[in-house]
Length: 87
Image (tube, rainbow, N blue to C red; front, side, top):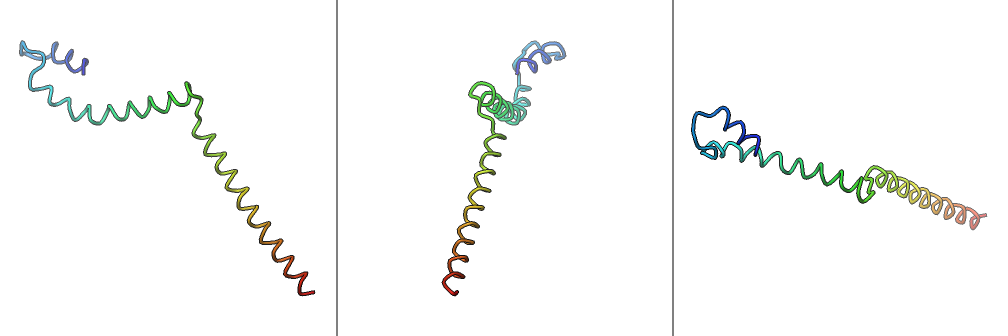
């Protein structure tokens, strides 16, 4: 916003700095402010709180793989028991 005001100060022929041209800035701010906030949020979480989302995602994938292996093992044990009962 300040850069827009400085630009208007140097390149505008008007004497008024905050004129109707400030409405041009509103759509730009609507796009840029959330973008900057989400970047800040990610950096703050990673460097201040030590929250690494990639590491968390990898850990969740490992836990899912372990759960799938546990289920497969249970299925194999059930098949083994049924085969032993038939013999």
